[in-house]
Every structure is written in structure tokens, then in C-alpha cells.
Image (cartoon, rainbow, N blue to C red; front, side, top):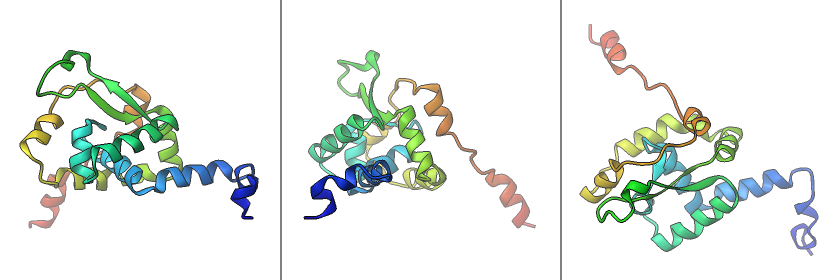
Length: 162
């Protein structure tokens, strides 16, 4: 019988880290987290997640529920868009606990890269419409944790084109 069959691994000193590592390392969940980090508003509709991850909505929904149950993500609703045909009203984004876990596991270091990848991905008209749709506000602590300074590319160009 293995350690996990006996439950011993679930109670050891590293049980929480092991659980979080498994949670973050599953392929679809990892992609969802990466795409949310790269999105300019850090809130994405199901259609945006489907397009950007290349996974089915059913697979994404299952993994979103897992991340919500773990307290890392939350479903945010933008009520003025409810019932509007072309605009999403449901979005997924991080919770305060979610950004704490991402900080602890060094995911937030990758924010600039995730943003660059997101911005350089070609999007369909529908996805561009979803991307520019109005959204609810993230809690201040979450929004602050996901902020990073964009590099000043004009200063870089100014130094190399002499």
C-alpha cells in the first residue's frame, strides 16, 4: 500500500504544499491561471478562456469549479451586461487567497511574460469584443497584487538608436 492509500501523506508537514502543487500543476488549471495572469483585466469570460487555452468549455468549467472550490478563483458578475446578447456578464478571476498562493509559488513573477504572450496572440472578432466588454471590479487587494510596471520602451529605444 502506498503512502497516499493510507492517508499518511495527507497529514504530513508538507500536505498543504503537496495539495497546492497538484492543484496548480494540472494542465488545464495551469493554462487557466496563465491566461488570467496575462489578461489586461485579469478577469476572463468562458469564451475567452476557451479560445486562449484551446480546451473545451466543459473541460474549462470543470477546472474552474475546482479552482473556485479551492478558493483561488471566484466567479464575478457584471450585472448591467446580464441579458445582453453580445456581451458576457460572467467572468472568472483571482481571489485574495488566490493571489497569495500565486505569490508563494512565484507565479506573479511571470506577469510581464504572461501579458506579452496574451497581447501577441491573434484574437477573433468575438474574442476582441469579449476582451473589451465592461467587467466588474476586482477587490483592491487582488488588483494591487496583479499590478506591475510596464517597461518604458521609449527610454530603451532612445538609448540604442544613436
